[in-house]
Length: 496
Image 1: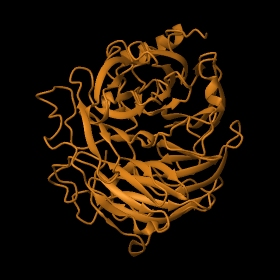
Image 2: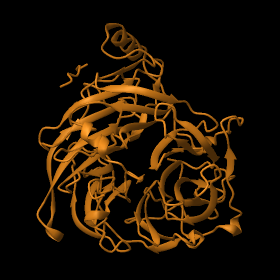
Image 3: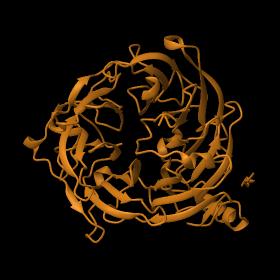
Image 4: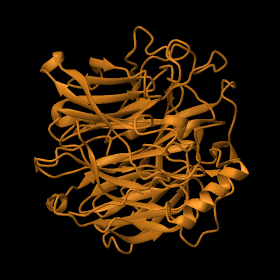
């Protein structure tokens, strides 16, 4: 057993617009001149700190409490195999998806496709310039899906930022044909209410359903007015993706959801969902919806039905994402304390705020309930210059255990065990030291996922990382092989 040291721009509405809007994408290669990032889509990268905070960080590095600037540290059971820096797409790296020997990397400026047939030496296959934060990404068969959650002047990949107060502005889902990985083609666009911050696929043989999560309406936005109390459901025919269209907008919060402050100080008011994870083999979904956590049935994918809803008005600020265990009797919800822009992994914040919440699912059918068991948070304190937050992760498939790998921005990557949902424990980690000591900087792992024997991470600033995990507790997962993985569409790992 390995011992471990303790040490948005705004939104819009519905309707297919493809050829009429002149859809096109700019294909880049590794040798192409760098794309010009669109400043309207870039998150704030740095905030000021005091001289004493900078001095404290420097002292912590000198004493060995935290890694040095850009220094890599990790537990003995993890090896860092490769890092591929950003290339033509200079924006913020975001989510990941996988298919066969390919990894698909989202970026605020577009997306990049890697050949990972040799995980030690990933190769760039293509890069597509298509700005529009945050470019949440997923794949199904020959289709790739990309979320746009910033107000654009049109739906093309040549669009520029435009205020959401303009009726003509556009936000929503983009669909690409990736039958030729070297030459992806933009084939469809669907405008969705308040844009698409994230999306989740519910694939069928003939169609792909897309659950679109978005939030933060305003009376000033013509296509994103309150109440925004549900999600958009898009139906995409595989044989004719250009016919993709909205088929429903189910209301998830008929009572308005969590009211937030002042009734619940420090808690986000619910005005939509941030992210949804589905477990199609069990007809279940879990929604992380700002001030609320949801469990719902997707037996009818066009009409999801709420089973249970929970709140945590003591320690959760913003319900960010959800992960089922393989047996579908637990859900891990993450809290994005600080909105992904603050240093929250320190002694001042403590172990419960900004943590994962582990919930057991008890009961049967429509009478199932989410029952809170415990919190999990990395105990490796980060400097006050490091943005650290619980972010995207995935199950590591081992029968009889509940294991997960998870991104924590500059807190790095954590592998942890929640088989006992009341006593979770970290069993491996990887992280880099601060990017700089002169300001609070957004960097680190956005997504860290286990796929076919390796951990793949999309680092916001440093690029694409590949890690190998060697541990008797996780080694059985190396025998599980998938043809495709979108983490928010959780597979049945052992029914194959």
